[in-house]
Image (cartoon, rainbow, N blue to C red):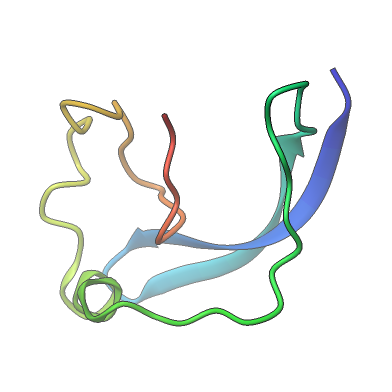
Length: 76
């Protein structure tokens, strides 16, 4: 599977945000990939940055994701 490298803001904990390159898989037959022109910051992302990630120290019950996290990332 081919991979594309993208820039991502990765949240490691309270006031610990790093910009990193991350590989993402290229879309398969029933998927699409879009180029982001603009983005925003959710209020909860600001609280996660300032106060720390209360729930991200343990895997999320649905996504199984935990810190470090990319704010706004959704994994199905």
